Image (cartoon, rainbow, N blue to C red; front, side, top):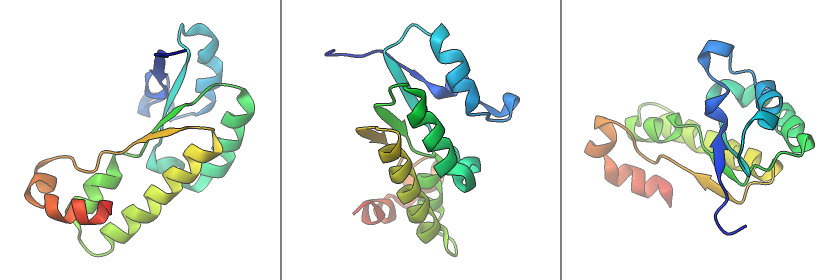
Length: 127
């Protein structure tokens, strides 16, 4: 399949439903797409291995992971341990992507006014 159609897991999982990852498996059969783009949330970090295992066992294709958007924001803010914490969390995003079989990961290395002001710091963190 040259250009697969993916549906973001954010279309079925959000704040209003408690970010229940099981809804991905519940609603996937109703979606006309080739696979899912998995959106990682910081609220899942403590359970990331359990969630990744369940998703990997589901048989759903997750070729792309959208990393937690707060990673880039925290690198930009760079207060206290922000950058170190964000880089640790990014590593967890990468581990999750690998565990569910993703081949690509989307990272918002910046976001908002602070990132534009301190973009050099973000580029150095990217290395």
